[in-house]
Figure (cartoon, helix red, strand yellow):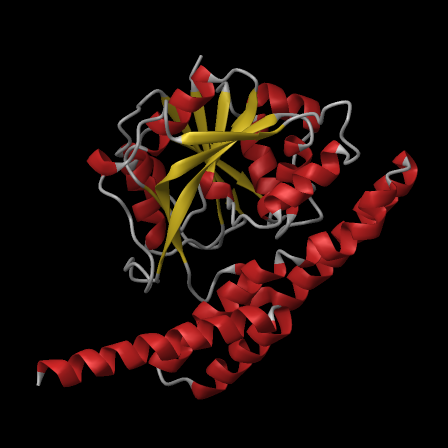
Length: 330
């Protein structure tokens, strides 16, 4: 049986899709199968299996990324499941690092790595950096274990603890590796939550299993106009739906603390949305698209005004330092 099943959902992929596929084939760990789930694309994908013979292509109607990921999982044979978004890129040691951690700690339900953001051209965004492979810590020293069932003396439920953990972490599907047995216990992604279904799944997994936070950067996350930041209103509606669902479960289980804090806990991922909007804001300004700049800036402020103010202060300080350096060199 294959050790790792890699699932790539795709819809109308662009040139970045080839980079994603190449990054899987370039892995130092090679015991994997690659399943691409086409979510009803109209473009020609006949080249896919011809150019990448290890790819198994599944086709479905346009039902959304959560359904596509579920389709891939149900057709996978691997003990471990890894997702990769069709416009992201894995660094060569990604699978090797995660398989090492998952093999060492059998109690782990899933692991996730760090990421660095790149623009549509594949260039690292300002402030982002990636260590060279030789500089990255090895798997046996590169992770911290979190979550799992709380102790008897804990007055915070396991679901509450999982929410507290993931509220402050930008953990995308491309960074994740999940044990198949954990999915069998927790279930698959919610089909009606195309943008936040992965977040909901991680919370559910984290409420039942230990999680490994791997310290090294193994993923390049592409920030561009096709990211979910383009669909702000849909994301906000899904967050509202998640709040209702978790409040209902809290009432059902008598979890008063979670009931009281669910709204505030689910609002905190707004910082991730604010970061997306702010990145789009900077890109629009660079391209002199002032109408788009104003739109994305307004959305960033709407999601997290404090984050925007902090980012603007840092940007201003960076500009002052650059001007000062220029004056000193004259």
